[in-house]
Length: 157
Figure 1 (cartoon, rainbow, N blue to C red):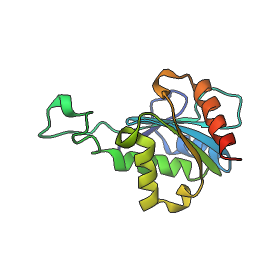
Figure 2 (cartoon, helix red, strand yellow):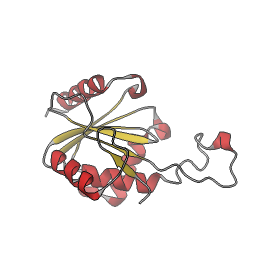
Figure 3 (cartoon, one colour):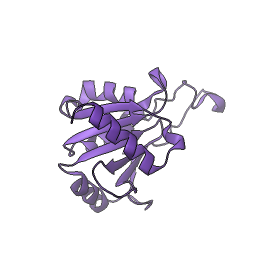
Figure 4 (cartoon, rainbow, N blue to C red):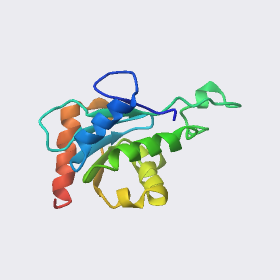
């Protein structure tokens, strides 16, 4: 698969590291900040501000599209299915998931990820406890976790 999981800034992917990540997440509530290019995952009820893992979308090889169009809606979903598949695999072991996205409508990767789950991973879709929108590119990890906790509380958990 073209998607890599980065664990605490280690830029190499291995089966052992993925299993370590899955064990940290297993049966825990997590928050995932999902953008077009990557998703960071934290434990919701942990004091650490460091993400447990990061799932990064492979850079698509775009053909017959000008470079300026690469991230502006033309051919931008080329590598999205493998990215969402890998993110779903990571989140599938969590007990509950809070998703925080950036943007509105089609530009919000959380909305596209939820659509992916509706089609491919309905069991995980049922464990999405809350969703929200925030300016996650300008927020620290701690601020994202606090926003997710607010969304979690608003959803009566």
